[in-house]
Amino acid sequence: MFQRILVANRGEIALRIIRACRELGIETVAVFSEADRNADYLRMANDAYCIGPAQG
Image (cartoon, rainbow, N blue to C red):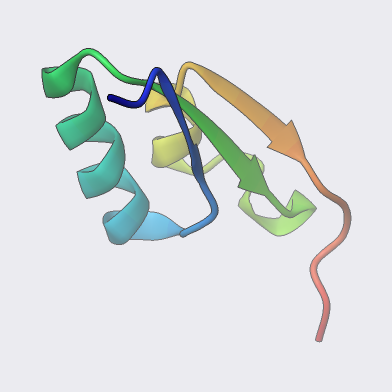
């Protein structure tokens, strides 16, 4: 089984993935742009890493 999962989604999808992983005892690592720095899903993840500024 997985020990750790990288979550590259945002918002509600990321929250659902992270919640499911917690229930299964799987650690989560979220990646995010600077625009999402204060998003809820980042506080729920075990680790979070900024990958740079938002594009567009």
